[in-house]
Amino acid sequence: MTNPKQTGSYYTPSILSDFLTNHLFENYLQEETISILEPCCGDGRFLRSLFNLRNLKNYSEVRIEIVDINAVELEKALNICNTHQDSHVTVFSSNADYLKFHSADQKKYSLIIGNPPYIKKSLLTESQIELCKNVYHKAGVHFSSIKNIWPAFLINSVMNLDNNGILCLILPAEILQVKYSERIRKYLLSAFERIEIFAFNELIFKKTLQDVIVLIGIKKVSKKQKQGVSFYQVETLNDLKELKFTEKNNNVHRKSLEKWTNYILLPDELEFIDKLKQVLKPVRYYCEKAEAGIVTGANQYFVVNDEIVKRYRLRRLCKPLISKGSLIQNKIKITRQDVSSLQQSGIPVNFIHFGDKRRAEFGKYAQKYIQAGEEQHLHERYKCRLRKNWYHVPSVWVSEGMFVKRCHLHPKLLINDAEVYVSDSFYRVNMKHEFAMADLVFSFYNTLTFILAELEGRYYGGGVLELTPNEFKNLAVPYYGNVSENQLNHLELMFRSKTDIENILNYTDNIVLKSVLKLGKAEIKKLGLIYGKLVERRLKRKTADEK
Image (cartoon, rainbow, N blue to C red):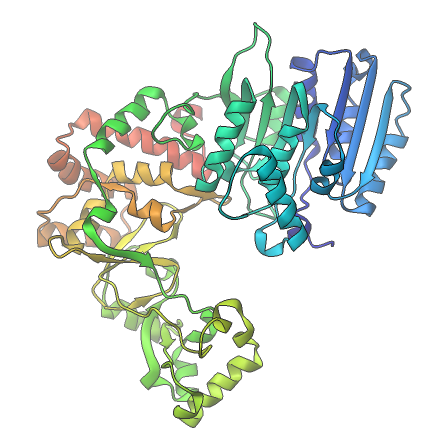
């Protein structure tokens, strides 16, 4: 396998590997005899940094074990070892899958260091999935399903450490925030007396757009060293050359807002948010439904522009549909005019909704279009082949409102005045009869709810914020049930005139937060500063006090 997505192989910059090896050897590895394991050595980035250490000669014996599934890359790593002939350093190599290697390897190590692969379940073999399950079973960490291979590498490595062992791995930032990582975070807290996490305001692996952190776990610390969890914020990799980074706050032992991404906030800031959140109801309290939008299985085929509709004479089968949040920027209300404008611009907004019937019951042009889909092998796609008739898309209904699943600058909840359908880039929202969609949308645009979206959602490289259906439904909203038509229209005008979000929140906060939570100017200002910290961190921009 040479495709990086299949092997999860994205190699560590030398600045980072040099810094980490220096940091660990200067501060933690004090024994005379040490053993090191790199479970996925790749072409030997960490090995090169290890051999370049000045104080490596201070150890009486150094035993290094390197493992990699790729024989070609392993050979590159061994070539590095061959250029450094030290009598007190012994190197062993294994061309193997680390998870399989570990099942036969009973040795324990002083240090395990590396950059584990990031491979989604869909790209894992059945054998790899079974190996992951075996690791979790042995560690007593139970998951309902396998999401990726990196958690197994992490947990396996923890079990491979000796009693004074140290772990240093580069991991996806999702370990700090996603729900399925919660068990891993608890496992780490029980395994190590001290944990260090280095987060970066720079994308380390730019080809992947995957945010990463460095996790260092120390099983036992000296009396002079701190226990608990320390977070460090690094602006650029070059800052590691001069040890320029900022230690942030330790908030991981809190019972609420327990995702580790809250480290950037002070304890009193989190307590302030907690206190406000406790008196509010979540989105789910006001909604009858809040579900994913329409899953076509092939948007480019099912959602088309007018040219395709005319060519195949499909107008009778079409329904208006918005497929992406980027098509409805600067709005809180979608009108029929908005949809018509997109249509006239040639944007695909025509959803072809074939009925659930035999193709022979359709006209000849519709049959030709179904045939065109099969020539593209769309009927073989996972979602399509599960259907009785692959071309019939189920769960098609119009919602009162829509929430954009992934956003950039801020979360978006909109009123569906156009009665347009939406794809699974949105969550469809219908209200309980005693509440109004317009009231929920107006109330949603406040700084406190935006803060909670940052803390309870997850973010990705490039600054994308995503909320799962449950995370969205659990967002606390100070519901203001007396929104006037003038207030709603004014908010809509602000969005359509591209007013910046700070001014928009200033307008809504002074209505919603003052009325519902009785907050004063100082408290609203405090929320604004907290929100600024979180957004700047996600978008990887410096806050005002760091510039």
